[in-house]
Length: 249
Image 1 (cartoon, rainbow, N blue to C red):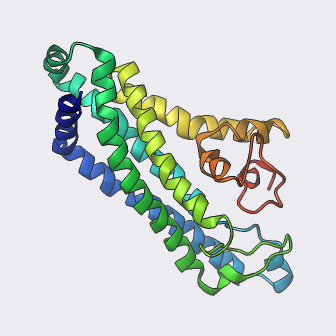
Image 2: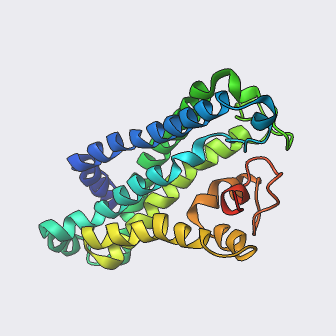
Image 3: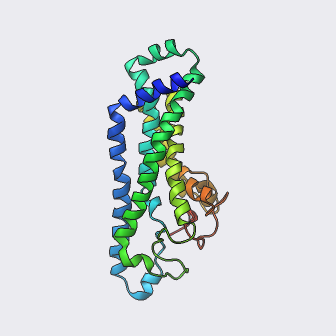
């Protein structure tokens, strides 16, 4: 099994498209910074009373996490669909006839890359959002939270770390999807449905179904694991809870 894992790790490193995908993950950082910039501009143009009514931006990671999830999901899918596309799957299965072992051997290398890259990306997303907000991040809002949340605040560090960990989980989901559909375009469609279409559809539901459906979306995974949300999302007053995303604006 060790030899099989080593060979799959070599395949993963040799795919040039993986480097391009990881480079594309910078778009998640730009999304966090861009949304924080728009929040800051709107915040500056309001009166003090109107500023107090602003919703908090939390740790800022949620603004770009869908982009990051898509990139890591595609990374996982390509780990196996690229072999079907090139026909190399025949050689791989000839060397490792047990498909379950073949698939499991891909997971350690993929998870290791996604864990490291996910952590770097999550902290970069948070840092970008907080840097753009600047001093505005400390503004206390009407609901008692601040416009932004630095890592020093309780629960924020855990939520950012878990966000990075969840990217590795999405990469493994992408690997499973790729193994199921055996097609890169098909895997892209399925991952788009999971990451983009389903959350969008959930937002159209009436409350409380909106919050209940939202709690099962991949987007809500980091804060639920970190303990900021559980099951169905808690009331919007709870800092960092994804229920703000699913509640009426």
